[in-house]
Length: 167
Image (cartoon, rainbow, N blue to C red):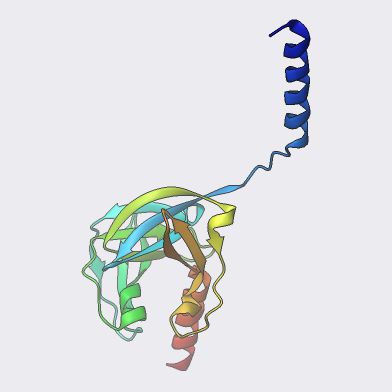
């Protein structure tokens, strides 16, 4: 190949590269965890801390999905048992997810932590179903071809507020 042919090939490659538009995709981090036999996810920025077993203190006259309170550095955290909320059966979890919730101290009782994943924006979906359980989810993420529901913490807190007002 002579110099002229090499220059033409370089020029043609330059034109092709200039015509290809590079689209950058946003990625979001999610904490994937287990509640019983099912995986769920939360945006990583909503999780403050992950604790292994912490004693939970029973509190009477609260909805059944409130396990009680956990003491963390002298601060009480309301512990939610989401399996009780979703399936009406309690979980034997040993981990607590301490959440970042403005003006509240919330912990979720979970079975185990699975992983932290980076999910591209194209793999994050909103839910179209409006059944009783789906109201507690803000969407779903696709991780390794598996759909995982993303908890909507604000929706769960709304349910608690509604239940307390009715009592």
